[in-house]
Length: 125
Figure: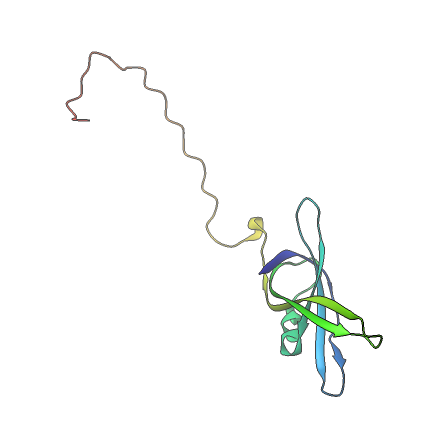
């Protein structure tokens, strides 16, 4: 799955626990009728993928949805969801995209006014 939008925030890499678990968050604002602010987390070695991205940049992030179950000390079961990114790509605005220059419109044809209904084609169709 993918999320597209403009980067609103890139967090610092956080390290947790004695095993050195790393996590880094990015918030992307979608560009639709009702924009959404989607927080995506990158973990472990994927944290470094965010080094070359900044606020305001249009991106496409490949994601996986993750869910987990947790039983609290009172014995109640809770469920948590997260959105994990595993790839991030820069999207360039069409106006700034390199490539072919715009093609000018072709001149319109003048309507034919010298048609004679008495002329017959010898074409079979």
